[in-house]
Image (cartoon, rainbow, N blue to C red; front, side, top):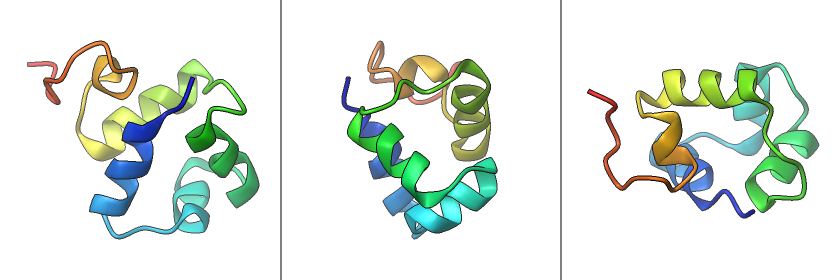
Length: 70
């Protein structure tokens, strides 16, 4: 699964993959693998991403086009 939305959210925040990796406590390489879909994103990381970008996990997973869970 390609996680296009986490790349778009990261770019919208003007962050590099390295910076996002630091926020999530992982390497740039691991974060890059998440964006490309080479690694499934663990639940804990999905929640951190959603909280950081103020979007729902469903939005990240392309289950909805609505960013907010409210």
